[in-house]
Length: 285
Image (cartoon, rainbow, N blue to C red):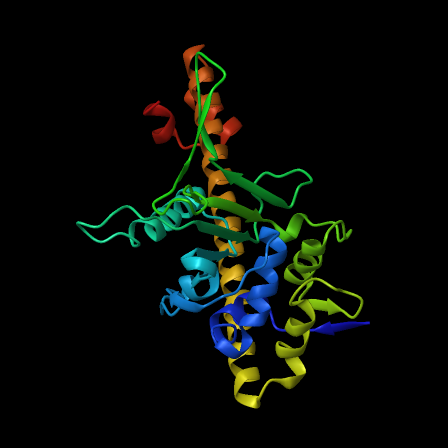
């Protein structure tokens, strides 16, 4: 049995910011990071941008979690050539904003969680992780951990951001881990009753599309319509671009053939008959 829920992007934008629903984010992050996570507060959001493109293409969320650590969510729907640069920028921004002028560099860990619903070149993998854990020696087999300890004897604080890239579209729906249950839900907007990942049944309960108010359903349906409309616009623009490029290439091909015929002394009238170009066009070659 499966329960259909609202899409995760809509949930993050409209529902999961409510402290009463933090258990869903807690579960998602706990399974992803493989540790117990508790969201303390939502400290920043840029998802209220009114641009039609931004409303349908991306959702941002920044949350403060255990011990002052920060989780930055980025959900991107359509291809963006500088997406990886944007990931880096958002993570660095979350680092820089922790330090005021004149204070110590007491940096808390930043987790950059990025969900991309477009092709990024992956073949089979659908969850990627990247981090810088240490400086490694070039000449000798030595390393220095990328961490700091401002309050000994407490454990050192891991400094460098940790990046996660999740590609729901690449998921083959074979459950290999608890977090795969979340990836399944990201891809299908469905929660199976046999799922046991932290927070996922809470997601099924709190995000059940059948429990939305008429106003919520209307807003949700409008958002999905805007998304479909934007996809259609992109597809139309792509088709027009291909058609224009094809026509341009065909014209260039005719001109090249005409020039070659002209160079070997074929009369312009015959070239015009063969290529469809006018005598005036042939004379300019």
